[in-house]
Length: 620
Image 1 (cartoon, rainbow, N blue to C red):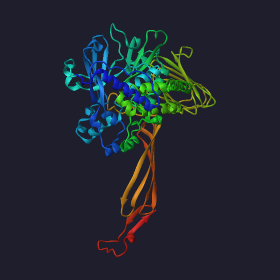
Image 2 (image 1 turned 90 degrees about the vertical axis):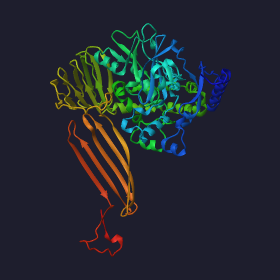
Image 3 (image 1 turned 90 degrees about the horizontal axis):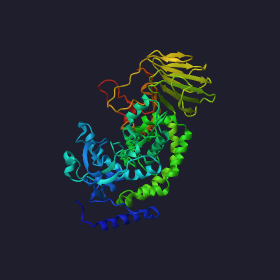
Image 4 (image 1 turned 60 degrees about the horizontal axis):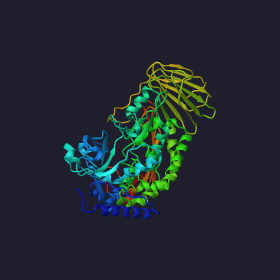
């Protein structure tokens, strides 16, 4: 299987394309092209994403030229790769087709399709226009993003797999999966696993997924995450616009030296389908007002609140332990490591055909975003620092909160039931950054000691039987939430009402949001003979709070103008929920000059003998 082009000519074409791409970026580098090896074919990643001007205008079109451009791609030799590959399982999330292989060399290998399969939609949406739109929006993804990401991760010292773009052959070795996968374009890589009697990935002695790792941390406080590496990986995600970093996209590994008093784990980010994603087009711009994580990778980095959503649970678990000085240092280090030459070389890992089309723009955007990274890190940090959740383990721990006169609070977490035991971690929360600190004590019989100044940020403690909460200050601001009977001494309120979360729609669904706020734009318009054309708009602001569902408050402010009445209308609507209660308060205020009624007289025999405007009753 392969094309008729001699290999020497093919290499010459590839090298020529690389040089042309570098010239387009403003300089020439002598790095040679990599030989794919084996047979190759010419394919387009997604010729079906071709679209005319109108479709591009509404549904986006930035990467469509990449999807429809023919590429010369290696055909994976299932008999040679990994010493010979045998399919083990198939799967995939967010519409990706994937297949795992066991190599004769003992390692596990994975293949993920470049194009997507919209069969993940609910049955009632199959065959509808929704399915067509979902399928078409695959074109918002960069078809070769993983090839660029790997060398950039290498530059910042983050462990990663090394995917390469290949075609799966129409080969009997695919077995029962042959019909589904033969001829599929995708990325092939050795997976981050540990296999018996062969070298482990990154020389690790153990590799866990996110759920297993969090369970390990909860059971044994000696297990800790390399927080600076995790922060570097998350800032990197932000830089490349990879919004889809949920817990299923991570594994965690430990090395042989990580034993004893502290067992340190290293994060490994995986699956880079959504890097550099561009949800452009008018309709996608409108959708972004309601789903802000539909990012549009360009020269400017998006707001932090638009980026963080899918990774919020791991961020709020781990990154809240780090003060700004650490964020400052890590962000600066990333900026220094990601030099212009490293970015240029990473972009050249794209297929040469893509380099010619989009290499210069991608390199320019990455360099521009690198200069913004430090400021965006600050924005990201402040977003996480506002309302902080600290989660204890199943072992006994002691939480000491020292309140300072300036309103800040120093939290020190110790292993065991006394403050003289080993310190697990500590952080000072500034009064200008943090309004609320929440301690979820877990099991093991924990102890909380509040000391220092009377002033301090609000402290909420979720406790149970066997826990002790001691407020040694004469100030308030300490609230205890429990259905058990913990020991509580000092000035603290106690709420014994049970709090029940709504049932999950899916097993992997996260708890409802209880922090921060969102802004949402709304359009307002209409037409009637009395009012004429009415146009306006406004904003929703929704605040989320501790144990208030579905939110703590929502306010709508909108205004509009009537061309017929030559006046306007302003509406204010507010809604607020009481904590851990179904009670809510509502307020509606309207200031309007466009409320018009028609009064034509009494009875059924009214004769309209005046100008139409005479019968209009205008209300203010």
